Length: 292
Image (cartoon, rainbow, N blue to C red; front, top):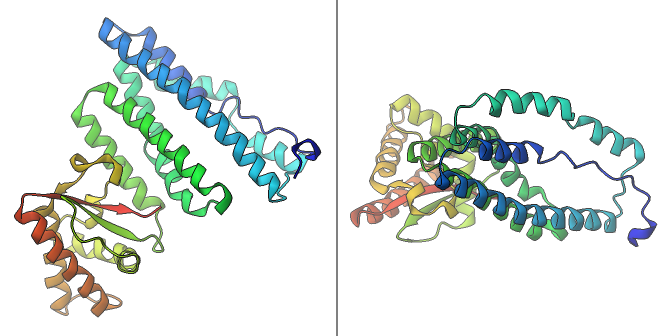
């Protein structure tokens, strides 16, 4: 469809990333050393590049939507714009979240907690719902967003905070994922690849297996979720996951715990056990990655 013929009012996105902008500005104003200043300025430069990607993707997504014949009415655009928080509301949040922090790193932490956990994970999981004509572009845009988030968290230079954010992201995955989401085992070093059918079946049984793990007093499988691109450090020792898997197998085989599709679930767990035992034998690591 010719863009010139589209009669759609613009959606106001001028404040979409306002909190991010203010967080960096306030963090920069609080720096105490040249090293801190260099870190914040580096993040600002990364953000400038990210904003270009955001603008290009937004333009492409809108054009593709129009090409599909999805033109928003004036009333719908007005409703969308009305849902966005006002500048006054955002400034109030800025005051509470950022201006009351004591250091630039505290500002970065506050922003990361509120923007790089549930918000980022929700966008990641929504990729599966994207129309085919924009899906690849949306995945690339999400990669840019997650790369920026990692750089932001790394700039804080606190391993305990990295672990805190990973835990918040794991919690967000479990909050947003549904039983239709396949779950894949990722190992370091690489081992046999879990096929899509097995991953889908594991995803369907996931919540029941987590509940059973908790009743057995072992770490639930969800405790080992990580994003694959985080790399080996985001995983756990394969032996730790193996402990949970073996406990689940023993509990289900005992007959004391009911679980749907028992035979299939046991076959999946047995396969996981064999793979994890092999990886653990070489001191390897592993994690579970949710399909997007």
